[in-house]
Length: 161
Image 1 (tube, one colour):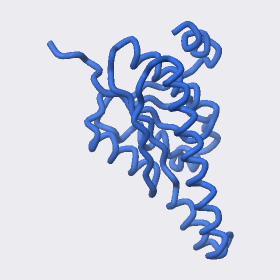
Image 2 (cartoon, helix red, strand yellow; image 1 turned 60 degrees about the horizontal axis):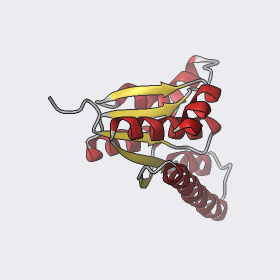
Image 3 (cartoon, rainbow, N blue to C red; image 1 turned 180 degrees about the vertical axis):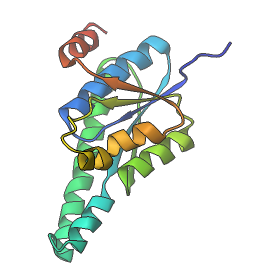
Image 4 (cartoon, helix red, strand yellow; image 1 turned 90 degrees about the vertical axis):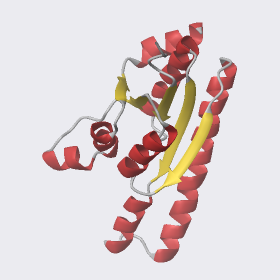
């Protein structure tokens, strides 16, 4: 019988919840001897929507995209450092586009067995539910999904690794 979890992908978006998810993913990868991929999506779809709504000018869009790409690099490097501290190797992946589509595509391309995401934000309306990109991805990926909660417990587990 082959291992049930050979490859784990953690979705990193710069939130505290996604960093907690990355810590959990590092622990799980270590315990299960699985490959780990950290994926950050630069949400160019949202930027295009802001431009169409005339909230952004074209010049502002380019500057905002550069900022988002710098954030992606910073957070992926942070996850890499967290993993290195625990002796876990991580492949850092970055893409651009619609978040849920990019996550589904990456899960398929990387042949991921488990997607790990941070705790979902509270849904206040049906509209919020429709637009939560992580939730849309969770519902559309072909693999199992683990939603990480309890930041304190995860921190203790990560520290003890």
